[in-house]
Image (cartoon, rainbow over all chains, first blue to last red; front, top):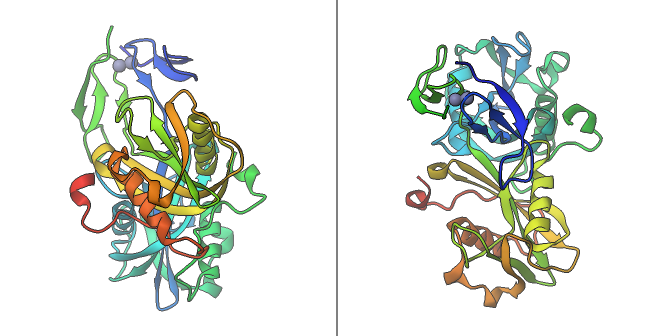
Length: 174
Length: 174
Ligand SMILES: [Zn+2]
Ligand SMILES: [Zn+2]
């Protein structure tokens, strides 16, 4: 037997859900949380070149889907370890971005690098770059551009409100 | 046919997932996002008495599961509308709490009340209370206590780092 999903409004619900015609399972799809970090050491920022699709070969920040059983801070630390073999120390929340088009909320932290780095299985390459050397045209996702830009606005500050999606970027996210 | 889930490690994955023996569907369960707000008007705070389980009859802040297709700010505004018929204006992120035991991340905003209030279908009662009148022993969840306490620390401030789980509360969340 194979899964066989179509959309229907379950009894007692107020919106359409994915329901399997084979077994009756209701797939309550919820937005997923991406946890990541702008990781800094001596004014340099950790970037990872993606070894996997989407956007293989483009540069990104360590970030990925949060799993059950962890806190959002633990998820960001795990992703840094998996993608760059990096131990990081979480400083604070930098930004909370929403990308409704793909059902994501991205919680991006500011963090400090506490170890060496090397590529994990999901990265082709890892490096620490100075601000002037950020490869802007080869960043993987708009939220990476936002997080780096917002990070730069907070240098030397510890008290600031977390950033949200920049105004006027709705066409990128919805 | 009925759904028939058990745990197995799917090919190419590194952890157990819920897999349906009837149709083969893999249920990638992820943490879910709760969006809510401490809503303020003239130094009073909006509370809702829950009409539904869990914790029916206890007081809570307007908050609930984020749905696909909305931003986290829109989710918080929708919950205030559903639970208290309230129009709110988002001020900023107050806190990001993780509750791994039940797979939740709670993004709590600070917000201003822009309308009258009355109970929606999920509330028995809604009210605006002064700080001294908060019914601490009848609050529905630990995160409600945390959000109210953290909110009080930020009165008059606009620039501060979002709060996380208070230290020493791991037994409540894991
Ligand atoms: Zn099925
Ligand atoms: Zn099934």
